[in-house]
Image (cartoon, rainbow, N blue to C red):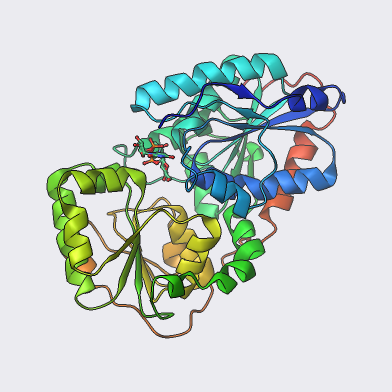
Length: 391
Ligand code: UD1
C-alpha cells in the first residue's frame, strides 16, 4: 500500500521557525538514514543552537522499514512526511525533488543535512542546491567505483552538490580530494551509525532475538540480500537460492527478507525452496531486533553497506556477497571479507562459535554525532543568509 501524500505535522515547523534561530532541515527517507541521522539530531538538540526540522520523504513506509525502526532509535517526531512511496528511480527521485522543494520554500532553512546514498539523499540535495540552500552530506566520499549501482550515482552527485562533507574514514576523504573537492570542506568525523549501535547495543543484546526463532547463539548464519544486482534477475536469484539451500545443509540460516527480495522470491517459488530447506525466512527486522540477531550470529552474509560496518563494530565475521565494497575500512580494520559474486560461495560460509572481538576502527567511537554537530554549529550557527561554498 502506498502512503498518503504530503502530510504536515500540525504546528511544529512554524513553531520552530518563530524562534528566530538558524534553521536546519534533516532529511530521512530510507531505513539506514534513520540510524545515521538520529545521533546528529540528538547532539544538536543538546546544543540548542538550531531550529531543527525533520523531513521524512516516505521512500520507506512499511512499519518494519520505518516506524518501528524510528521507535527503536527514540527518533524525534517527524515534522513533515512527504509520502513519496516506491517507484522507478526516475519517478521516485522526481517526486522527492518536487515535494521537498515545496517544503524548502515554506521552511526556508539555512542548511539541509542529507545522509548516505539513497534516492531521497540525491533528490533533496538537488532541490536544496537549485534554491541556493547550503547542503551538508553525512557519510560522504564512499566509492565502490561501480557505476552500475544506483547508490554510486547518488553518492558522487550528492558529494558534488554538498557544501560541507562529513566522512567516516580517511579513504573517503582521499576519494573526495581525487574528485577535486577542497579538503577545507571535508570533516573526518567517524561513523554515526556506530553511535546508534553503541547506544542501543545493551538493549539489543537483552532481546536475544535468536531464541524466538529457535536458534542458539553463534550457531546460525544471518543473511540479508536486497541489492538489485543480486535479486532483480530471476536466473541469478535462483542460483543464490541454490547457494542458501547449500548453506542450510551445514548451518541454521536466518533470513530477514527485504520487501524487494520477498516479492522476487515469491514470484519464482524461491520462498518455498528456502522454507523446505529449513531456512528461517522472517519479516524484515526492526532496528533492535536486527542488532540482536547480528550480535548473536556466528557469521553474516550480506550485500548491505551498513551491515558491513555494524558487523565490524560487533566483531562478527561478515561475508559481503558483492565484487566490491565502498567501505574498504571494514576490510582493513574490521571483520569484513568480500565473498565475490559466485552464489556457490554462499554455501561455503560457516558460523564461528568463538566469542566476537569488536573492532576499534578510528573515530568509530560512539561520538561521531557530537563531531558532526560541532562542525554544523561552527559553519552555520548565527548565519542568517548563507551562500553555498560554490558561490
Ligand atoms: C533502498 C536504497 C538502498 C538501501 C536500501 C535499504 C536506493 C536507490 N536504494 O533500497 O541503497 O540499501 O534502501 O533498505 O535508494 N518496499 C516496500 N516497503 C517499503 C519500502 C520498499 O514494500 O517500505 C518495496 C517496494 O516494492 C519497492 C522496493 O521495496 O519498490 C524497493 O524499495 P526502494 O526504496 O526503491 O529501494 P530499496 O531496495 O529498499
